[in-house]
Length: 402
Image (cartoon, rainbow, N blue to C red; front, side):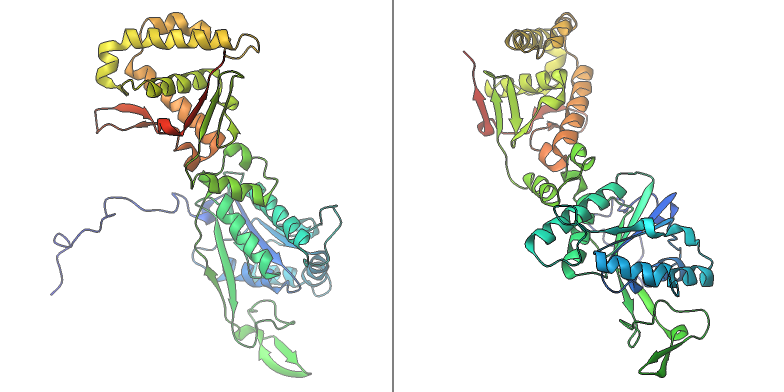
């Protein structure tokens, strides 16, 4: 007897709609396939075949890129674009655009001095490769209209690892990671590049042993954790180091300290200067921290309604004091101009507007997970807002000026 849908037990997350993205990867106007490759350029044609010719709906790249060592890049050029030109043959057989891939799309890894890497053998080579893989994936994921598909099937194991981890750091909901799977006998065969739509003999030791038409090629998608929100957007815009991105993503995993140096008018969280917040957002932030230090009540709707004028005046006085302290450097000079408006009162709408600007600025500067430790949260119940700074007073170091 079947259970009625009405009587079925509900899963704990049943009320939440779980989606990777509102838009599937194939719907994006720019679709990039990036493969890390060594001495087996076949992974490019095999992966492209699996994506564009076997999947429903198909993911047809508008660009194909290879990242490889100098030796691997030369091997890719000779076998995919020159000689028998297996990439062009695949495009002709399956009516794909050969213009999506050219020599300009073959990226050669270099060492710290900028010389092409023939292979990756030393610690320094590994670090250089990691940084270049991170920069390339960071660049491809910077465009909101692009869906990136990364194949980690080729190259040295460390290259595949770095590619997968870089996608974990920078990947968006529309990005994917995969490994191509090739049937027995065809995998690693130097003459096999993709299943042909016609019989094509493949030789081994001078004998015909296989027919490329019979090959089975499938793609195994690899789930990965997306950590992009843990990295500040300003760092995402200028990815320079794989290690730096890792370190930034890890900061939010541990409680950090907030250092407020009023003597030098310097403020930082987890070692990151907060100057980029802007004077208005920083002043509001510091005022809320001062209230927390003095055990003053959080900003509730009821408190703002009852004491809005007094709270506005207190914030105005605080802004004036900041402007005086920063007069030598010009810091907070502009916020003094808002004192008259503040003295008319601080409303719930004012706090909500300032909260939005503050939290957005914190997220851009620190990354989502780290910013959550210091942002202004609504700790009230639905319809009864109460706004409080997340960080505990014990995690704040105040350094008073003379």
